[in-house]
Length: 99
Image (tube, rainbow, N blue to C red; front, side, top):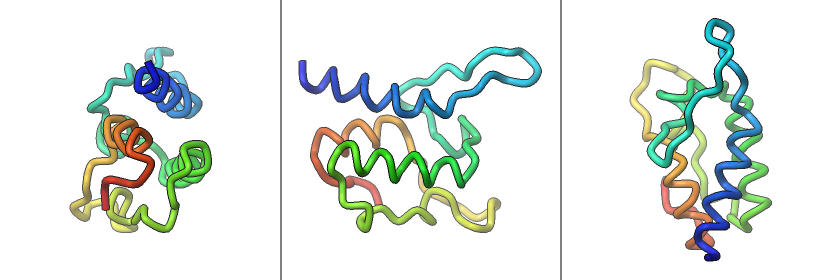
């Protein structure tokens, strides 16, 4: 039950940043494997704020999250996926499991 609650809490946190499309007026369908950079096209400033809120809420040391690995300054540079699954699994583990 706790893990289900954690998953719901992570989705709720990300949902705060899920605005409606300008063209379809629909929200993006969030799933565990949604990459917040490639799929969701999250603004880096919003992503940084999300990760700050996430780290605070789930007791994750923010110093262990290398933001540039997921949102490099050069948008064309290769980067690791920042998925909702990674957020959920890290929250459950109580520590950052990515880079």
